[in-house]
Length: 266
Image (cartoon, helix red, strand yellow):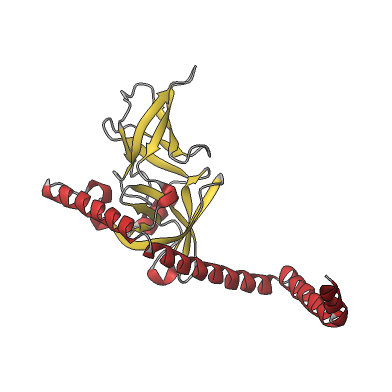
């Protein structure tokens, strides 16, 4: 303890100088928009690079699990083609482009969760591109840099996805209530829909972000609230969002044209 005190006394001027320099730099960054934006850009790039290195390190020890996931996806696609039908999870193929990506940062413990992937502007990723896995929807891109992108996770209470019941084609709005990370709620399905437990839920295709018929999950439970004409349906996701590593960025080649057309109706 005595040595520490002696060191502080001996170097008091140097330490004071360092503290004042750090305080000055902090004030410059906080009070100046240009410096603040540059600092945030640098720090975000550094954090993303560290996360990417960490992800690569972790993947080395999870190669078996990753390989099993890829085998499962290949078998799914092979079975669809062998049945001589379209790959319903990725249609219409002619309208959409798919870019593979890896998750480098992910959280599921908040009510508004975000995911970072290792593809950005230089890979053609844009805001409002969808992101999927071989088991369902993961989220929607909300921000991009040159090499990275963040997306609003499906486990984010602000995200609402158009979804439908595969067997009956009834549409609704899928949203997370910030409770169970495996359960979402499907709203706005009318009470005349003949729904059943274990019915499959898919994307409805009523937006320009996701193709229709991407599998999402199954009905685990449902209720019809008093004095309501619409069900509240609990959906158990096929995908475990907390363990995803490989995803696909979905780009609708005609999204801008569709959006411009729909603006004329507003």
